[in-house]
Figure 1 (cartoon, rainbow, N blue to C red):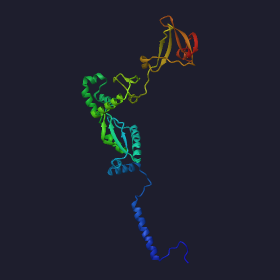
Figure 2: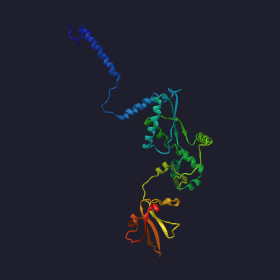
Figure 3: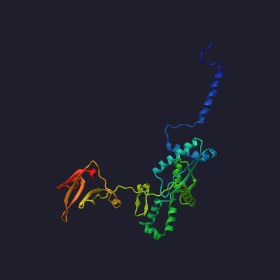
Figure 4: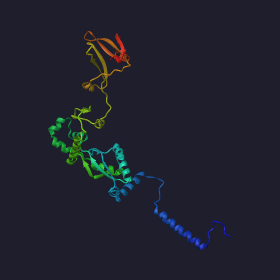
Length: 316
């Protein structure tokens, strides 16, 4: 009687079986590359990118889905007159996530790149090259000549952008990229605006926007942020004369004196205590000023000014 687990058969048969299993194991092991315990993410990424490029994976993601429902992605285009930065890497990561998701859902995804060739970043870059500081110099130089330099400048770093896009693994078709200064693009925008107009979706109104007196043009919030810098500016005290009380003024403090030409209102807190004080004028006589009671000593240190009236801000 044989004990459980023992192989039934001759020693030669057992050796033959072990030999076949060993050869099979060697073949299986040969199918897999050895995995290093020291991971190099850069080499790993570059290997994947080479695989995608050599096997045309991006192109296949489009052709294999022909006939499926379309998901169209038009890239919000960057401007190639400057080198890409880390914020562009973040934006391109977001732009890549959603088209990939729709490919995995089985959709036919069209990914068309674009290049933004309009706007202040391009124009200011050319102004710096020419040493210009105002709009009059551009007009004297010639607007047509200036625009031609802007067109050339818009693609100054195109190769860096293409390498940047490839290295990130951002799948987008740059061979069919649209260019915003091409007439076909401009005419398309005009056509879209006309469709909106015909459907009654456009209206004329007013909007407060940042304005650059040097450039002679309104600015987008993004363009304002491009020039952000810490700076020391003067704060000023301004008298706002009261129409119904001659000789009396609201004493207003502001850290943004450049906004005063467009100022239309003064705000008072309804629950804050305000006072009217009398103060002598250097040229003789006196004036009455309205300000917050808590700031009286801070505004007029060492001056014992008579308080004529005290009240809550809601009275104002």
